[in-house]
Length: 368
Image (cartoon, rainbow, N blue to C red; front, side, top):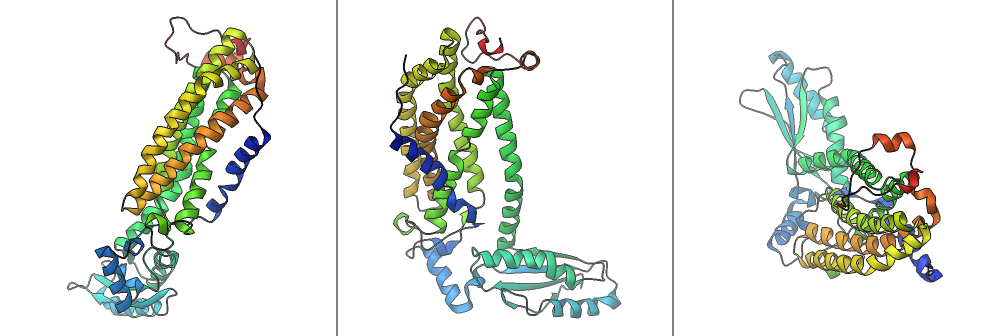
């Protein structure tokens, strides 16, 4: 068997895709996509524009400020209200904050803050965080009172913060479990490391494409997106979960054929060539089907659906072509016999999983 080397232009193109496309990801702006991003023919967009013209863009996403002074004595409530009202004067990124108003029982003070920008703007997010973390706590300093920022916009900001903080943990858990499964099935330490690393390579590139198209506006109008929009907070998490699962399907399919040939011949280079020869067409056809399905969502009127459709289509295309059929065979060829090496104690501890469903467990050539 011989391994035909791909032209240098193909290898260079693969490197460009993996290195260049993720660049926009470094300045990604997470947020919530509001009605202002819809086409101007939509009724919600017309209402958004009318509100913005008459009362300012922040009128489309008011923030409700709440001060719970239940535990404050009656004699101190007037002083607390005066102190809080002064603290709410001249807040950056706020066009106006209405005077504090007490409820009928006097236990709660409420006010409404309007941002200088639209609800999906980064300045509105900054204003929400500033009110929550700095302004309101200082407004009740010295008193036993609790403060809250509520409303639809505030809830969206809180959701964004929760998703952003949990995303690294989600990625670590998914990649870690995938590493253990690959290690248990194929009994190769470097094979498992390679799978965990390369299966993540298409994710940054895909997010870079999404940022360039929607946040930077490169082609957004052609997709029916009005102006530049932030990346919906949960889109990267959903794309990672879906794409990682699909890429693992292709990975297991390709590695099974490589491992099968390796056990039979003991020749690492020929095993890679044989596996690539019999799986390349299948992987390519399966990827084309998934790309077609995901690309169909781009014609949806919902911008988040457009974002997911474009991101998933680009991710599957990059993973199946650049990662699965170029990088994986190249790395496996470079690793050679070392790919299937595993320490004896580790081999004994790991469960034996028969991915092929054969009657007899395969010989663990790398453990010898």
